[in-house]
Amino acid sequence: MAAVFDEAYVEAVLAAVERIPPGQVASYGDLAEYVGIGGPRLVGRVMSTHGAGVPWWRVVRADGRPVRGLEQSALDRLQHEGCVLRGDRVDMSRSRWRPSLS
DNA sequence: AATTTGACGACCG
DNA sequence: TCGGTCGCCAAAT
Image 1: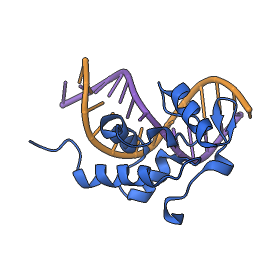
Image 2: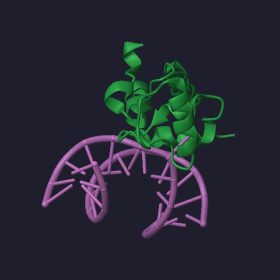
Image 3: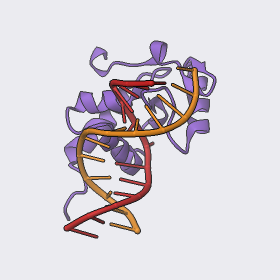
Image 4: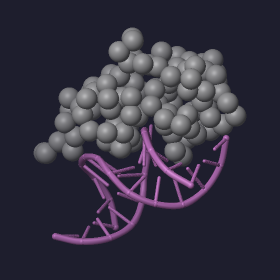
């Protein structure tokens, strides 16, 4: 079967997501940059397809808005982890995690 | 094969 | 701060 996505790419994205510490978040663009391939949309597709099993709620949009369709769940989990929220948005300035900074 | 859509991002007014 | 527009990349229709 022709792999829908390169396994390496999927694994890299999922690994990066699992690296995100509790109370912090990362944007799709950051993950894409960290992996070094494609763009934010590609990461989003990987998440929608293989995102189960990883803390997907720590992956938010660049504007601080959580995952589409699961915003309420994501906000609830993030808030429970101690992430600083601003209304229905995440305070990126404080909670944004840089992959390379571990 | 062409157009639209999608777990997106940056820019502009 | 908010909304509209364009660009990006692969899958779905």
